[in-house]
Image (cartoon, rainbow, N blue to C red; front, side):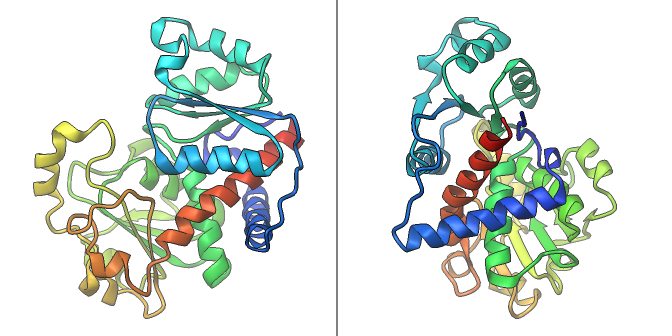
Length: 300
């Protein structure tokens, strides 16, 4: 049995295989074909942090695979009323075939997965967001081929998505250049582990210079709303605009995991422009996650 808690739970070949399968699922979906590969299978979805894309993509994905999904908010479980994580994991393992968890604490998710006897998927923690990486890489591969050896620029907060880009750079062999204000760097342990493929750039311009892919995210993630004013000041010069994209390669792509704040981390003419693939990127959450669930369920 396998879990996906970190990108590094996969080998490079497994990662590439999953996103290739995701592209196959996307093509089938576009042709109106749905394979009921897992009839009568149930996905348990635990949400401590809400999300439009995560809920819809997993719920629709499991339905398209022939199964069923159960949405569990903090009000729907005993987690918020003192039940140990391990007990919840053991109970749900008796009732569902696979579990996805979107939560704050990465450590708590690790504890949950250790007690579970069915596959567990990290649908976001405060440290990592591996499902986003599968969708992002599937999108890049569909447009430009393999990302190995390419330059990727990250502009903005060194958050969980940035940490996941560091892990994925190590796994797939691309070069990540991170532009972030002092004090907003990615996790030190993650960066140190991935230092062969990820570096802190001197400026957004240096990070984006000759880049094949430019990526950003919101300046204040969920749970950081009280820091918004300070963060806006710190990130004032970290907006991805047309000038910054102009320093990247002519055929560079732009990605954002959404939701986006136009006029803050990205200008409208970039996210809505010809180089942006954010809508396909969002759509590929559905297909990459179907491929991931197939991979884990077949491994169970």
